Length: 263
Ligand code: DCM
Ligand code: DCM
Ligand code: DCM
Ligand code: ZN
Ligand code: ZN
Image 1 (cartoon, rainbow, N blue to C red):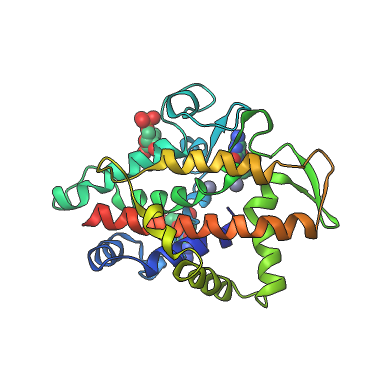
Image 2: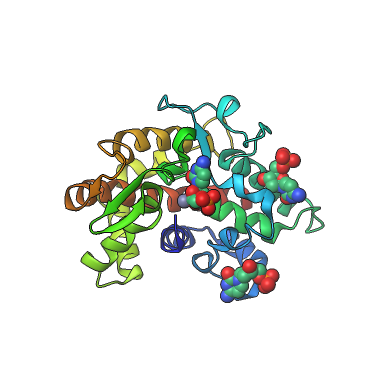
């Protein structure tokens, strides 16, 4: 996602944190974040150059089978195991679990662990961040977003959200967040418990989110799109509900994960 997608997810998450998680997040966030996850979730994109090892941690590349398997797919271009967004979520979750046990003498920089986890929980919910290796998650599919040139990946990171903000929310990000929050308490209310649940007593469940992601990529992002496709109202209006739901799931699950981590 672009900055707006990450901001929406982290604003939703901030509003759902338990008391213990609010306190831990306050202690861990850097000063510039002003005690609010909503301000901090694009940090991981800003450090890609400073931390080049972190670039492959933003996505998963799958073969063209519309399915995901951790052992097969969660590796970087050199084949290093676990170096994908699902592995990163597991890794930073286990780092943050030392927050309570290690009386803050953790060997990790838990501020960075929180900033990475909050960003990657968002990215794993962007369908094309669990996309095909062959087209780099839609980065080599050249399309037109209405009259402008774009790549399909960027349409899903940014254009659908920005067009919705302009057309339906008077360019207000907060109004779009409010609309998604409304859906979480009405239309999606029965599903939210299931979104939050991690089976087998696990703290984080990135493999579930990645499996949903590649299915959404096949069913909605890639579907009907080819090189030089013109994407306009038909595509925008049918895909926006998918984007809204993935943003909601990302926010709900980030909060649920942080609530499990910080007790
Ligand atoms: N940063 C940010 N928003 C701010 C201030 C800083 O996203 N208001 C980012 C820029 C740096 C990173 O945080 O890439 C680390 O900041 P610092 O220089 O404070 O360690
Ligand atoms: N990592 C790190 N510093 C490095 C290299 C990696 O903090 N110099 C983190 C980012 C990855 C995690 O370690 O999420 C996985 O590393 P490994 O490949 O050792 O499992
Ligand atoms: N990306 C992806 N899958 C890939 C390569 C990149 O999802 N195989 C994502 C990471 C960035 C965006 O696409 O969000 C652009 O990547 P880059 O800056 O590496 O071109
Ligand atoms: Zn992206
Ligand atoms: Zn990212």
